[in-house]
Length: 484
Image 1: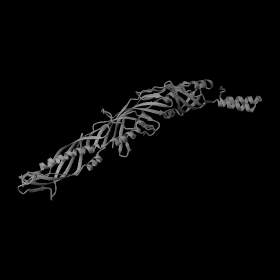
Image 2: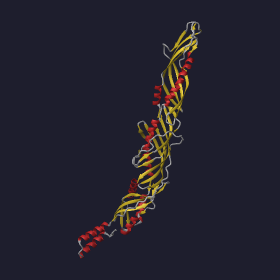
Image 3: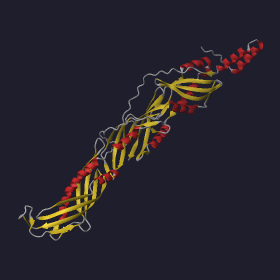
Image 4: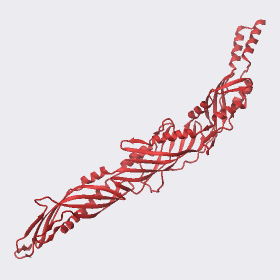
């Protein structure tokens, strides 16, 4: 039960003094009466009862993010170069005709990417030992004997070795488990300094090519084997892990990408760098606290479907504190004149949500002081990105308290002032959020992994109050790149 004895302070004081002068009122009773009277200058209605129905938030669609990725393949090429033999030797000995033995020493393999192909070029040196028998007989031995003395000759023996150039071409792809696969073919052999034996009019270069071709074709398999050991999974797992962690948006919460799947386009090469596009499917959210996504395990590759940049649907769960702060900033210090009296707004806090509406707790001072509660439904205009509370009104318990103790405060001027303060243009905050996201998208996210990107457009699609947070669905478009 509440006792209301409200009146003008000076009037009450004069009345009590008058009673004290002409009656024998106990001073204690006077003091108690003053406490009651002055105490009722504070409005303290009971807070609203928060009742929540099960709110259905629209299912978040999968967002697709195209990330152009470039990878420096030089470390892998260097490893391949070291793994392939540097020296090859062979021979063919016959009784009649030309016999030879050769030695081929290769230099470093140079790799050059052109479009979808890799070109491997090797500068090498060779030496040949030759002997010639014009006629053999099998008399006395099944192996045969040369019936005239053999003619011996050589190239690159006891002198500078002759020069030869070798080239391969490789088509490279990527398997579902992120390993490179390749098909390598020998594309050319060129003897820069040929071996011509004039003494028996013999061009040894063609023979050399035939022999070395066999050895170098075996080398094709070695190259493919070495390339197949190149596993991009560690780099992709590192990237996936990074995308699974929260990105601090410096005052706007933490961005969680929540990646779900990844697909990779055909690999293109330029020099020693591989370029491809990764399509990440994700369900990004912005939360007030840093969390780690459940999707920390890198899945196998999905089918690739080309798109440009990213088009993200992002869910934001924002505490009411920031919204309360904006409303407070808009109205704090504002006074409302009501029938010769006034109140001044101090602090505003969103008290909680009931169904589709929210409760506002408003502290005030002036001819009256205390707390009032208001109830309103947020209405969002997607065209101009503004939020308003057009039906904001006194909560029933606050209305009841005012009608009993300060009826003059039950006035539209108060609700109109609050409605004006609660109307917010969110575009400046979205622009600030966009800047903050852009800062977060341009950094070295881990050693050797650089992320660069830009949000070109960001806007709100949907707003829904929930119990202790405001649910906001954002749409953003832009681009993102990674270099490893």
